[in-house]
Each structure stands twice: as C-alpha cells, then as structure tokens.
Length: 451
Image (tube, rainbow, N blue to C red; front, side, top):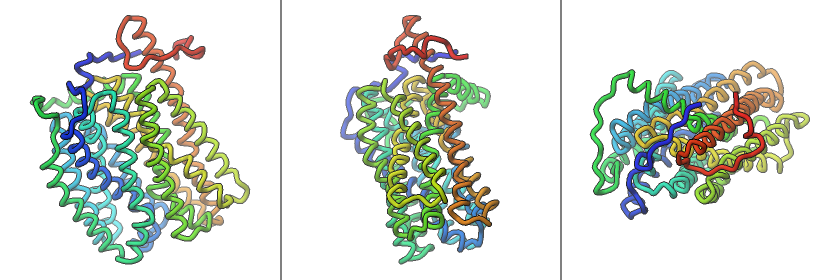
C-alpha cells in the first residue's frame, strides 16, 4: 500500500485568504471554462443536423464525440505536465485559441474528415481548461475554500452547457449552422488575449518557481507516483463512475434519445436536456459547501448518488416497450444531473493526497477516468444503434444504452474497491503518527485490509 503524506507547505501555496485579485483571476479563467463547456456540448443538440450535413449514420456521428472526448482524455496527463511546466496562464491562453480555431473550422466544414479534424482541435483545447482552472484555484485560494471553488466553478461552467441546449437550438434554426458556430469560434479565440493579460499563475508577492525541462523518464515517474497514491486512484474511479452518464447524454446521445426513442419534439427535448445542466448548477454550490465543512462526507455522498443512478437506469431500461411515461424522464435526468457536481469530489481527493508540485499531474490522471468512460460509452452506443437499426427506435436505444449501464456498474465496483483501500491507507498513516487530510471514523468493513 502506498501513501503520500505531503508536508503542509507542499499542499498549497501560502494563501490564507481570498483576495480581490484572486477572484478577478478566477473570473477570467471561468469564462474560458464556460466557453469550453459550450463548445464541448454543442454537438448535443446539433447531432441530428450534423448527421444530415455530413451524411453519416449513428456510429460515424458517435465518432465525433469519441474523437473529441478521447483526445480530451489522452491530453489530461500531458496537460497536467504542461501546467506544471509552463503555468496555467499560458496553457489557458492556448486553450482558448485552439477551441476558437476548432469551432471556426467546424462552422465551415463541408466534409466528414474536415469535421472530424475540427472536433479534434477543439478537443485538445478543451482538454487544457479544467486542470488549469483547478491549478489557479489551488494557488490563489486557501485550502479550506478549494472544494467550494471547485463546485462553484463546475456549476458556472454549466452556463456553457445550458447555452448549448435551447439557445443553441434556436440559433441553429435562425442563423444557421455556419454563422452560429463561426461567431462562437471567433469570440472564443479573441478572448485568449484577455486571458493572457489578466491571468497570473501565483498570487502577488509569491515567486514563480523556474522549472527546467524534465527528461521523459522523470515525467513518467511523476505520473506513476501520482497513480500509486490510493487517493488518486480513488479519485480516478469516482470520476469514472459519477460523470460518465450525464456527460454522454449531454454531449451527444440524450437529444436523439428523447426525440427518436421517446417521441419528444425538438424544443421539448432541448428543455429536458437542459435539466441536466440546471440540476448541476443548483446542486453544485450546495454540495461544495457541505463537502468543504465535512470532507468526511464526500465519499458517502458519491456512494448514494451511484446507488440512485443504478436505480434510474434500471427503471429506464426495464420499462416495458422502452417508451417511458413523460414525468419519469425529467425526474431521471434531474437525478443523473447530480453526477457532474459530485464528480468534483475526485479532484479534492487528488489535491488532498498529493504534494503541490504533483497536483496538476494527479488532477490530470483523475480527469482521465471520467472521460475514458465517456469515450467508451459514446462509441459503444453508436455501434449498437447501427447494429440494431432494424428495431423500433425505443427498442434500439434501450439495447444501446445498456452500454451506459455496464460502464456504470464497472465504475461502482472499482470505486468501492479503492474507497476501502484508500481508507486503509489513511488508518495506517494515522497509526504511524502522520497527519492526514481528513479524519475518518473506522467502520466495521474497515476491519480487514483489502487484498
């Protein structure tokens, strides 16, 4: 069993209060993150239009999301290393430029390969935002406020998700594909100048450490050390299991499912999809405050959500005929919406159990979990829809969405395993007289060390 017990001065920069400059820097970074969420989920309500524009079926349509999110997942560890090396200011500036360029290319794309290339560029830019934002928060805010800042950041990012539902549907119907995405891309690229001007890597008066390029072997060891920490591994699987379902629905398959399988109009489907965002925005700050005051509750909260998500999928997939009564679908989407803010628990785990010089790398490792699950789920749903396209839509989607349930079950299993192992590591550290970030109460199921 591995344990990392960073010294207090390694856990955070010497910040004891949130200054006006800290809030200004955070606000500037949040705008980039809101743009990232808009661009990331813009295909959610534009999926049917994209299918017509590029002349592709479900599997090829799913490839847009698989490529974009797959690159996002692959870029998380490199992004953490880039932030550690160059600082969040430069990385966020590059992110805004890449996202803007990708969306401009997507606006003018008239072929499937160009469309894929544009989503790839967008995915790389998107991948650089969250880790950079968390690093800024860790540097400019006291440790006790970090969970609240993470939750508020995720909730405000939901504004980008919300803009990509009903408003984007109306814009696509009015201004059209090209102008809608062209303006969004140009505005994002232009904001890169604002980010570069206003962001600061560390608080005023703190010396920015000068880091030298590290050999590949050193970089790999840094990743391995982060992965060996039980808290990091628990964060990975918590993120894997909590965020995958609402993300897959919001990014691509929720809108077609509501229109084709549940028979909703496009406006009603957009509104229902918006519940994923509204629920996350409303719950995020509340959950963040609770977790900040009582960090020992963060994993029980995640556990209760996962149990509820399993019940929701049992209802949606087992309902006779596959067409669920109208009131059930919005209720199910509201429950699943909590997965987004609850997934922020994973980043608090990465921060608490890793020294500051490795927090960005550990955060990147944790972030891979959720987006690896999204990539696998989105691809599997598209392939299954193609295979069963001869069935009525409600039946085809019920079979295809089994992939989401399987990924959830795997995530719940691995989260339970590493929850127990991480608790064991904490108790062993306490027995050695070491300081631990969270005081845990020993339970009966903690009596034996996990194998």
